[in-house]
Image (cartoon, rainbow, N blue to C red; front, side):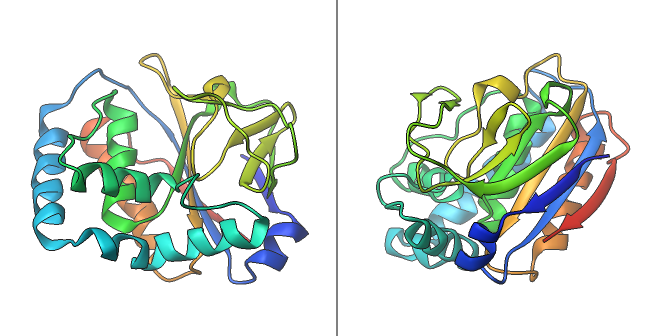
Length: 221
């Protein structure tokens, strides 16, 4: 199992930080109709019940934005993924359809406001992962974004380097159709409240749509 630690940099910027991890064996698919019925139902509800100016006030999103500021990053230029997804919907654009694992992580992120890292666990180098802060010119290739400037962003690192930030995960460890083991990391910059519910939500969606027993949940801080 993975050993996940939180650096003093993050603890100083966010003393209330709590993290949850879900590790599970899975079977991915290109598209799942049942999952997309859930996604479409929730996104319609979100659009009709949300004002654009309220997005950054959602507790988990607001807390993530505050950590960006404390670590030296402008959250309006490098938006946390949960905020970016909500803003995309509010602009009248549809949610990206990638594959079942990515799509279900996006659904949990939309529902909860957490920016969630979803990784192909078999691509992670070693079992030690540390949450720190990105350095100047630290190499990081964001998924579909090319080279990403992660200076001042919270970043999970394995023994080779960065694998994920709340803005984008790394191409190196991304989930694909052939992914057989998932590690999902829920970033509780707003503290413990709601963290377990988000992790259980991931488990339940994996059971329903990814031929999984839901795997195991563990917490870190």
